Length: 479
Image (cartoon, rainbow, N blue to C red):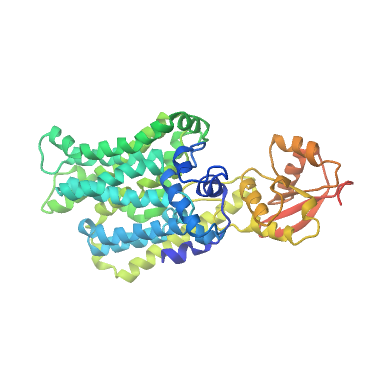
Protein backbone atom coordinates (compact mmCIF):
# COMPACT_ATOMS: atom_id res chain seq x y z
CA UNK A 1 0.00 0.00 0.00
CA UNK A 2 2.81 2.41 0.94
CA UNK A 3 4.70 1.66 -2.27
CA UNK A 4 1.58 2.18 -4.38
CA UNK A 5 1.01 5.50 -2.62
CA UNK A 6 4.49 6.92 -3.21
CA UNK A 7 5.36 5.46 -6.62
CA UNK A 8 3.93 8.38 -8.68
CA UNK A 9 5.95 10.82 -6.58
CA UNK A 10 9.11 8.74 -6.98
CA UNK A 11 8.99 9.43 -10.71
CA UNK A 12 8.60 13.19 -10.30
CA UNK A 13 11.30 15.82 -10.77
CA UNK A 14 13.89 16.31 -8.08
CA UNK A 15 12.96 19.47 -6.22
CA UNK A 16 14.97 22.34 -4.76
CA UNK A 17 16.37 20.72 -1.60
CA UNK A 18 16.77 17.30 -3.19
CA UNK A 19 19.01 18.79 -5.86
CA UNK A 20 21.13 20.49 -3.19
CA UNK A 21 21.45 17.14 -1.40
CA UNK A 22 22.36 15.34 -4.61
CA UNK A 23 24.77 17.82 -6.18
CA UNK A 24 26.42 19.40 -3.15
CA UNK A 25 26.77 16.37 -0.88
CA UNK A 26 25.88 13.03 -2.47
CA UNK A 27 27.92 13.75 -5.61
CA UNK A 28 30.05 16.49 -4.09
CA UNK A 29 32.40 18.96 -5.74
CA UNK A 30 34.85 17.60 -8.27
CA UNK A 31 37.87 18.70 -6.27
CA UNK A 32 36.66 16.98 -3.08
CA UNK A 33 34.38 14.05 -3.83
CA UNK A 34 35.35 11.90 -0.80
CA UNK A 35 32.79 10.97 1.81
CA UNK A 36 34.66 13.18 4.30
CA UNK A 37 33.26 16.16 2.39
CA UNK A 38 29.80 15.17 3.64
CA UNK A 39 30.92 15.36 7.27
CA UNK A 40 33.19 18.40 7.02
CA UNK A 41 31.09 20.69 4.82
CA UNK A 42 28.01 22.38 6.29
CA UNK A 43 27.40 25.47 4.16
CA UNK A 44 23.62 25.18 4.46
CA UNK A 45 21.22 23.34 6.71
CA UNK A 46 20.25 21.14 3.73
CA UNK A 47 23.07 18.79 4.69
CA UNK A 48 21.26 16.07 6.63
CA UNK A 49 24.66 14.63 7.43
CA UNK A 50 23.99 10.96 8.15
CA UNK A 51 21.52 10.70 5.28
CA UNK A 52 23.90 12.56 2.96
CA UNK A 53 26.52 9.91 3.76
CA UNK A 54 24.03 7.18 2.84
CA UNK A 55 23.22 9.05 -0.39
CA UNK A 56 26.95 9.46 -1.13
CA UNK A 57 27.40 5.68 -1.02
CA UNK A 58 24.17 5.04 -2.93
CA UNK A 59 24.91 7.25 -5.94
CA UNK A 60 28.27 5.53 -6.35
CA UNK A 61 26.62 2.14 -6.11
CA UNK A 62 24.26 3.30 -8.89
CA UNK A 63 27.27 4.63 -10.83
CA UNK A 64 25.80 8.14 -10.76
CA UNK A 65 22.45 7.29 -12.32
CA UNK A 66 20.12 10.25 -12.80
CA UNK A 67 16.92 8.17 -12.54
CA UNK A 68 14.84 9.86 -9.87
CA UNK A 69 13.15 6.71 -8.55
CA UNK A 70 16.52 5.00 -8.09
CA UNK A 71 18.05 7.96 -6.29
CA UNK A 72 15.12 7.99 -3.87
CA UNK A 73 15.25 4.28 -3.03
CA UNK A 74 17.12 4.67 0.31
CA UNK A 75 14.40 7.01 1.57
CA UNK A 76 11.68 4.57 0.51
CA UNK A 77 13.58 1.74 2.19
CA UNK A 78 13.67 3.69 5.46
CA UNK A 79 9.92 4.26 5.11
CA UNK A 80 9.27 0.54 4.63
CA UNK A 81 11.47 -0.28 7.63
CA UNK A 82 9.42 2.15 9.75
CA UNK A 83 6.22 0.32 8.83
CA UNK A 84 7.82 -3.06 9.56
CA UNK A 85 9.06 -1.77 12.91
CA UNK A 86 5.52 -0.68 13.86
CA UNK A 87 4.15 -4.09 12.90
CA UNK A 88 6.86 -5.95 14.78
CA UNK A 89 7.49 -3.91 17.90
CA UNK A 90 4.38 -1.90 18.74
CA UNK A 91 1.91 -4.81 19.24
CA UNK A 92 3.31 -5.30 22.77
CA UNK A 93 1.71 -1.95 23.72
CA UNK A 94 -1.10 -1.63 21.19
CA UNK A 95 -2.10 -5.20 20.48
CA UNK A 96 -1.85 -6.80 17.06
CA UNK A 97 -5.01 -5.30 15.54
CA UNK A 98 -4.38 -1.70 16.63
CA UNK A 99 -0.71 -1.91 15.64
CA UNK A 100 -1.77 -3.19 12.21
CA UNK A 101 -4.19 -0.29 11.76
CA UNK A 102 -1.43 2.08 12.88
CA UNK A 103 0.85 0.73 10.15
CA UNK A 104 -1.93 1.25 7.59
CA UNK A 105 -2.38 4.81 8.89
CA UNK A 106 1.30 5.47 8.23
CA UNK A 107 1.12 3.79 4.82
CA UNK A 108 -1.71 6.11 3.75
CA UNK A 109 -0.69 9.19 5.73
CA UNK A 110 -0.40 12.45 3.75
CA UNK A 111 2.33 13.43 6.21
CA UNK A 112 4.42 10.26 6.49
CA UNK A 113 4.06 9.35 2.81
CA UNK A 114 4.43 12.98 1.75
CA UNK A 115 8.04 13.02 2.97
CA UNK A 116 9.21 9.40 2.98
CA UNK A 117 9.94 9.37 -0.75
CA UNK A 118 12.15 12.46 -0.84
CA UNK A 119 15.92 12.44 -1.27
CA UNK A 120 16.24 13.99 2.17
CA UNK A 121 16.79 12.86 5.75
CA UNK A 122 13.17 12.93 6.88
CA UNK A 123 12.45 9.26 6.27
CA UNK A 124 15.57 8.20 8.19
CA UNK A 125 14.61 10.59 11.00
CA UNK A 126 11.16 9.02 11.33
CA UNK A 127 12.64 5.50 11.37
CA UNK A 128 15.05 6.43 14.15
CA UNK A 129 12.19 8.23 15.90
CA UNK A 130 10.12 5.03 15.86
CA UNK A 131 13.02 3.06 17.35
CA UNK A 132 13.69 5.76 19.96
CA UNK A 133 10.10 5.84 21.20
CA UNK A 134 10.10 2.04 21.46
CA UNK A 135 13.22 2.25 23.60
CA UNK A 136 11.74 4.86 25.91
CA UNK A 137 8.54 2.83 26.21
CA UNK A 138 10.67 -0.08 27.38
CA UNK A 139 12.40 2.16 29.92
CA UNK A 140 9.06 3.46 31.14
CA UNK A 141 7.51 0.00 31.55
CA UNK A 142 10.54 -1.58 33.25
CA UNK A 143 12.54 -3.31 30.46
CA UNK A 144 15.67 -1.33 31.25
CA UNK A 145 18.24 -3.31 29.27
CA UNK A 146 16.27 -3.50 26.03
CA UNK A 147 15.21 0.11 26.44
CA UNK A 148 18.83 1.25 26.50
CA UNK A 149 19.78 -1.02 23.59
CA UNK A 150 17.13 0.70 21.47
CA UNK A 151 17.17 4.27 22.71
CA UNK A 152 20.89 4.94 23.14
CA UNK A 153 21.93 4.28 19.48
CA UNK A 154 18.82 6.06 18.19
CA UNK A 155 19.45 9.08 20.43
CA UNK A 156 23.05 9.27 19.23
CA UNK A 157 22.18 9.02 15.52
CA UNK A 158 19.16 11.33 15.48
CA UNK A 159 21.09 14.65 15.74
CA UNK A 160 23.52 13.42 13.09
CA UNK A 161 20.66 13.47 10.59
CA UNK A 162 19.14 16.84 11.54
CA UNK A 163 20.36 18.84 14.56
CA UNK A 164 16.82 19.60 15.77
CA UNK A 165 16.16 15.85 15.99
CA UNK A 166 17.79 16.09 19.41
CA UNK A 167 14.51 17.57 20.62
CA UNK A 168 12.86 14.16 20.37
CA UNK A 169 15.06 12.36 22.95
CA UNK A 170 14.76 15.44 25.16
CA UNK A 171 10.97 15.10 25.04
CA UNK A 172 10.91 11.32 25.34
CA UNK A 173 13.09 11.27 28.44
CA UNK A 174 10.48 13.31 30.28
CA UNK A 175 8.16 10.30 30.14
CA UNK A 176 10.17 7.75 32.21
CA UNK A 177 11.33 10.55 34.52
CA UNK A 178 7.73 11.60 35.14
CA UNK A 179 6.12 8.16 35.27
CA UNK A 180 9.06 5.97 36.23
CA UNK A 181 9.07 2.19 36.24
CA UNK A 182 8.22 1.46 39.83
CA UNK A 183 11.04 3.70 41.12
CA UNK A 184 9.82 6.12 43.80
CA UNK A 185 12.99 8.19 43.76
CA UNK A 186 13.40 10.91 41.12
CA UNK A 187 17.18 10.54 41.36
CA UNK A 188 16.92 6.85 40.45
CA UNK A 189 14.69 7.64 37.48
CA UNK A 190 17.10 10.27 36.19
CA UNK A 191 20.07 7.96 36.63
CA UNK A 192 18.35 5.20 34.66
CA UNK A 193 17.81 7.40 31.62
CA UNK A 194 21.13 9.26 31.85
CA UNK A 195 22.82 7.10 29.15
CA UNK A 196 20.19 8.24 26.63
CA UNK A 197 20.82 11.89 27.48
CA UNK A 198 24.59 11.38 27.18
CA UNK A 199 24.15 9.69 23.78
CA UNK A 200 22.07 12.64 22.57
CA UNK A 201 24.72 15.11 23.70
CA UNK A 202 27.45 13.07 22.01
CA UNK A 203 25.48 13.14 18.76
CA UNK A 204 25.05 16.90 19.08
CA UNK A 205 28.75 17.38 19.85
CA UNK A 206 29.59 16.58 16.23
CA UNK A 207 28.46 20.08 15.31
CA UNK A 208 31.08 21.53 17.65
CA UNK A 209 33.70 20.26 15.19
CA UNK A 210 32.18 22.44 12.46
CA UNK A 211 30.85 25.16 14.74
CA UNK A 212 31.59 28.25 12.57
CA UNK A 213 29.91 26.64 9.55
CA UNK A 214 26.99 25.46 11.66
CA UNK A 215 26.35 28.87 13.21
CA UNK A 216 26.56 30.57 9.81
CA UNK A 217 24.15 28.07 8.25
CA UNK A 218 21.73 28.46 11.17
CA UNK A 219 21.82 32.24 10.81
CA UNK A 220 21.23 32.15 7.05
CA UNK A 221 18.50 29.50 7.06
CA UNK A 222 15.07 30.92 6.37
CA UNK A 223 12.09 29.76 8.38
CA UNK A 224 8.54 30.76 9.16
CA UNK A 225 7.68 34.20 10.52
CA UNK A 226 5.78 33.02 13.57
CA UNK A 227 6.22 30.14 16.02
CA UNK A 228 2.48 29.77 16.55
CA UNK A 229 2.02 29.20 12.82
CA UNK A 230 4.60 26.42 12.92
CA UNK A 231 2.99 24.80 15.95
CA UNK A 232 -0.44 25.11 14.36
CA UNK A 233 0.80 23.35 11.26
CA UNK A 234 2.27 20.56 13.41
CA UNK A 235 -1.20 20.08 14.94
CA UNK A 236 -2.78 20.17 11.48
CA UNK A 237 -0.30 17.57 10.27
CA UNK A 238 -1.13 15.37 13.24
CA UNK A 239 -4.83 15.67 12.42
CA UNK A 240 -4.19 14.81 8.77
CA UNK A 241 -2.07 11.86 9.87
CA UNK A 242 -4.39 10.38 12.51
CA UNK A 243 -7.78 11.78 11.54
CA UNK A 244 -10.75 11.10 13.85
CA UNK A 245 -8.55 9.02 16.17
CA UNK A 246 -6.90 12.23 17.36
CA UNK A 247 -10.32 13.68 18.18
CA UNK A 248 -11.34 10.50 20.04
CA UNK A 249 -8.12 10.69 22.01
CA UNK A 250 -8.74 14.34 22.90
CA UNK A 251 -12.24 13.40 24.01
CA UNK A 252 -10.77 11.01 26.59
CA UNK A 253 -8.78 13.80 28.24
CA UNK A 254 -11.12 14.05 31.22
CA UNK A 255 -10.85 10.34 31.93
CA UNK A 256 -7.14 10.58 32.67
CA UNK A 257 -7.80 13.18 35.38
CA UNK A 258 -10.18 10.89 37.28
CA UNK A 259 -8.92 8.11 39.57
CA UNK A 260 -8.67 4.75 37.83
CA UNK A 261 -11.70 2.51 38.01
CA UNK A 262 -11.70 -1.26 37.76
CA UNK A 263 -9.75 -1.09 34.49
CA UNK A 264 -6.48 0.18 35.93
CA UNK A 265 -4.45 -1.12 32.99
CA UNK A 266 -6.55 0.84 30.48
CA UNK A 267 -6.25 4.01 32.60
CA UNK A 268 -2.46 3.55 32.81
CA UNK A 269 -2.22 3.30 29.03
CA UNK A 270 -4.33 6.43 28.63
CA UNK A 271 -2.15 8.30 31.13
CA UNK A 272 1.01 7.13 29.36
CA UNK A 273 -0.40 8.30 26.03
CA UNK A 274 -1.22 11.75 27.39
CA UNK A 275 2.17 12.19 29.05
CA UNK A 276 3.94 11.11 25.85
CA UNK A 277 1.84 13.43 23.68
CA UNK A 278 2.18 16.45 25.96
CA UNK A 279 5.92 15.94 26.39
CA UNK A 280 6.40 16.06 22.62
CA UNK A 281 4.08 18.98 21.97
CA UNK A 282 5.40 21.09 24.84
CA UNK A 283 9.01 20.66 23.71
CA UNK A 284 8.07 21.62 20.15
CA UNK A 285 6.06 24.63 21.32
CA UNK A 286 8.79 25.96 23.62
CA UNK A 287 11.38 25.55 20.87
CA UNK A 288 9.45 27.36 18.14
CA UNK A 289 8.41 30.20 20.44
CA UNK A 290 11.98 30.71 21.64
CA UNK A 291 13.31 31.37 18.13
CA UNK A 292 12.86 34.66 16.26
CA UNK A 293 12.61 32.74 12.98
CA UNK A 294 11.33 29.21 13.70
CA UNK A 295 12.14 26.44 11.21
CA UNK A 296 9.83 24.86 8.67
CA UNK A 297 7.36 22.42 10.27
CA UNK A 298 8.97 19.50 8.42
CA UNK A 299 11.91 19.48 10.84
CA UNK A 300 9.47 18.10 13.44
CA UNK A 301 8.58 15.02 11.36
CA UNK A 302 10.81 13.07 13.73
CA UNK A 303 8.01 13.43 16.33
CA UNK A 304 5.40 11.71 14.12
CA UNK A 305 6.02 8.14 15.39
CA UNK A 306 6.08 9.17 19.06
CA UNK A 307 2.94 11.30 18.85
CA UNK A 308 1.19 8.58 16.85
CA UNK A 309 1.99 5.94 19.45
CA UNK A 310 0.75 8.29 22.17
CA UNK A 311 -2.64 8.72 20.51
CA UNK A 312 -3.01 5.03 19.69
CA UNK A 313 -2.26 4.14 23.32
CA UNK A 314 -5.11 6.41 24.37
CA UNK A 315 -7.66 4.92 21.97
CA UNK A 316 -6.58 1.29 22.12
CA UNK A 317 -9.20 0.28 24.66
CA UNK A 318 -12.19 1.84 22.88
CA UNK A 319 -14.84 -0.68 22.00
CA UNK A 320 -15.07 -0.08 18.25
CA UNK A 321 -11.82 -2.00 17.62
CA UNK A 322 -13.62 -5.24 18.35
CA UNK A 323 -16.96 -4.25 16.80
CA UNK A 324 -15.71 -3.05 13.40
CA UNK A 325 -14.36 -5.55 10.90
CA UNK A 326 -10.65 -5.16 10.03
CA UNK A 327 -11.39 -4.62 6.33
CA UNK A 328 -13.82 -1.85 7.24
CA UNK A 329 -11.16 -0.18 9.41
CA UNK A 330 -8.62 -0.38 6.60
CA UNK A 331 -11.17 1.02 4.15
CA UNK A 332 -11.88 4.00 6.40
CA UNK A 333 -8.15 4.69 6.76
CA UNK A 334 -7.64 4.53 2.99
CA UNK A 335 -10.60 6.86 2.42
CA UNK A 336 -9.25 9.30 5.00
CA UNK A 337 -5.86 9.44 3.24
CA UNK A 338 -7.46 9.81 -0.18
CA UNK A 339 -9.70 12.71 0.90
CA UNK A 340 -6.78 14.61 2.42
CA UNK A 341 -4.68 14.00 -0.68
CA UNK A 342 -7.37 15.27 -3.08
CA UNK A 343 -8.21 18.29 -0.93
CA UNK A 344 -4.61 19.41 -0.40
CA UNK A 345 -3.71 18.83 -4.07
CA UNK A 346 -6.59 21.04 -5.18
CA UNK A 347 -5.67 23.74 -2.64
CA UNK A 348 -2.01 23.67 -3.70
CA UNK A 349 -2.95 24.12 -7.35
CA UNK A 350 -5.15 27.08 -6.49
CA UNK A 351 -2.42 28.72 -4.42
CA UNK A 352 0.20 28.23 -7.10
CA UNK A 353 -2.01 30.04 -9.60
CA UNK A 354 -1.85 32.98 -7.17
CA UNK A 355 1.95 32.89 -7.16
CA UNK A 356 2.27 31.01 -3.86
CA UNK A 357 4.44 27.92 -3.34
CA UNK A 358 3.09 26.15 -0.22
CA UNK A 359 5.50 24.00 1.78
CA UNK A 360 4.12 22.54 4.99
CA UNK A 361 3.27 19.17 6.49
CA UNK A 362 0.22 18.60 4.28
CA UNK A 363 1.16 20.55 1.14
CA UNK A 364 4.26 20.40 -1.05
CA UNK A 365 4.12 22.40 -4.27
CA UNK A 366 6.71 20.14 -5.92
CA UNK A 367 5.13 16.76 -5.16
CA UNK A 368 4.48 14.73 -8.29
CA UNK A 369 5.64 17.54 -10.59
CA UNK A 370 7.32 16.64 -13.91
CA UNK A 371 6.54 19.87 -15.75
CA UNK A 372 9.98 21.49 -15.53
CA UNK A 373 11.84 18.49 -16.90
CA UNK A 374 9.16 18.19 -19.57
CA UNK A 375 9.81 21.76 -20.77
CA UNK A 376 13.57 21.15 -20.80
CA UNK A 377 13.06 18.03 -22.89
CA UNK A 378 10.97 19.95 -25.43
CA UNK A 379 13.51 22.77 -25.65
CA UNK A 380 16.26 20.22 -26.21
CA UNK A 381 14.39 18.90 -29.23
CA UNK A 382 14.11 22.41 -30.72
CA UNK A 383 16.43 24.09 -33.17
CA UNK A 384 17.52 27.14 -31.14
CA UNK A 385 18.16 25.61 -27.73
CA UNK A 386 21.70 27.05 -27.60
CA UNK A 387 20.43 30.61 -28.19
CA UNK A 388 17.60 30.68 -25.67
CA UNK A 389 17.94 32.31 -22.25
CA UNK A 390 15.24 31.32 -19.77
CA UNK A 391 14.25 33.20 -16.62
CA UNK A 392 12.62 31.09 -13.91
CA UNK A 393 10.96 31.84 -10.56
CA UNK A 394 13.23 31.24 -7.57
CA UNK A 395 11.28 28.19 -6.33
CA UNK A 396 11.65 26.49 -9.72
CA UNK A 397 15.16 27.68 -10.49
CA UNK A 398 17.34 24.83 -9.08
CA UNK A 399 15.13 22.12 -10.56
CA UNK A 400 14.90 23.77 -13.97
CA UNK A 401 18.63 24.47 -14.15
CA UNK A 402 19.42 20.89 -13.09
CA UNK A 403 17.28 19.35 -15.85
CA UNK A 404 18.47 21.94 -18.35
CA UNK A 405 22.03 20.73 -17.73
CA UNK A 406 20.93 17.09 -17.65
CA UNK A 407 19.65 17.53 -21.21
CA UNK A 408 23.11 18.76 -22.22
CA UNK A 409 22.28 22.47 -22.43
CA UNK A 410 24.33 25.25 -20.86
CA UNK A 411 23.07 25.98 -17.30
CA UNK A 412 24.40 29.53 -17.64
CA UNK A 413 21.44 30.20 -19.96
CA UNK A 414 19.04 29.81 -17.01
CA UNK A 415 18.50 32.93 -14.90
CA UNK A 416 16.86 33.06 -11.49
CA UNK A 417 14.01 35.54 -11.29
CA UNK A 418 15.61 38.04 -8.90
CA UNK A 419 17.41 41.39 -9.02
CA UNK A 420 20.58 39.81 -10.43
CA UNK A 421 18.81 38.60 -13.56
CA UNK A 422 18.67 42.09 -15.15
CA UNK A 423 22.43 42.54 -14.73
CA UNK A 424 23.28 39.10 -16.11
CA UNK A 425 20.96 39.58 -19.08
CA UNK A 426 22.42 42.96 -19.90
CA UNK A 427 26.07 41.95 -19.51
CA UNK A 428 26.03 38.52 -21.14
CA UNK A 429 23.11 38.16 -23.54
CA UNK A 430 21.20 41.33 -24.55
CA UNK A 431 21.80 42.38 -28.16
CA UNK A 432 23.81 39.26 -29.00
CA UNK A 433 21.23 37.24 -30.85
CA UNK A 434 19.67 35.46 -27.88
CA UNK A 435 15.96 34.88 -27.40
CA UNK A 436 14.51 35.27 -23.94
CA UNK A 437 11.92 32.96 -22.43
CA UNK A 438 10.16 32.61 -19.08
CA UNK A 439 8.80 29.51 -17.38
CA UNK A 440 5.60 30.35 -15.54
CA UNK A 441 2.18 29.09 -14.53
CA UNK A 442 0.28 31.73 -16.51
CA UNK A 443 0.67 34.90 -18.53
CA UNK A 444 0.56 37.16 -15.49
CA UNK A 445 3.44 35.26 -13.83
CA UNK A 446 5.36 35.31 -17.11
CA UNK A 447 4.84 39.06 -17.40
CA UNK A 448 6.31 39.55 -13.91
CA UNK A 449 9.40 37.57 -14.87
CA UNK A 450 9.92 39.41 -18.15
CA UNK A 451 9.41 42.67 -16.27
CA UNK A 452 12.52 41.96 -14.20
CA UNK A 453 14.64 42.32 -17.34
CA UNK A 454 13.51 45.43 -19.21
CA UNK A 455 9.86 46.22 -18.81
CA UNK A 456 7.00 45.12 -21.01
CA UNK A 457 7.46 42.54 -23.74
CA UNK A 458 5.12 40.76 -26.06
CA UNK A 459 5.38 37.02 -25.72
CA UNK A 460 3.70 33.77 -26.72
CA UNK A 461 3.59 30.18 -25.50
CA UNK A 462 6.36 28.09 -27.03
CA UNK A 463 6.01 24.86 -25.04
CA UNK A 464 3.33 23.66 -22.63
CA UNK A 465 3.86 20.99 -19.96
CA UNK A 466 0.95 20.46 -17.59
CA UNK A 467 0.22 23.67 -15.68
CA UNK A 468 3.47 25.40 -16.64
CA UNK A 469 4.50 26.85 -19.97
CA UNK A 470 7.58 28.31 -21.62
CA UNK A 471 6.73 31.79 -22.86
CA UNK A 472 9.13 33.26 -25.42
CA UNK A 473 9.37 37.01 -25.95
CA UNK A 474 9.24 38.52 -29.44
CA UNK A 475 12.38 40.66 -29.62
CA UNK A 476 14.25 42.36 -32.46
CA UNK A 477 17.47 40.51 -31.58
CA UNK A 478 15.83 37.07 -31.39
CA UNK A 479 17.12 34.52 -33.93
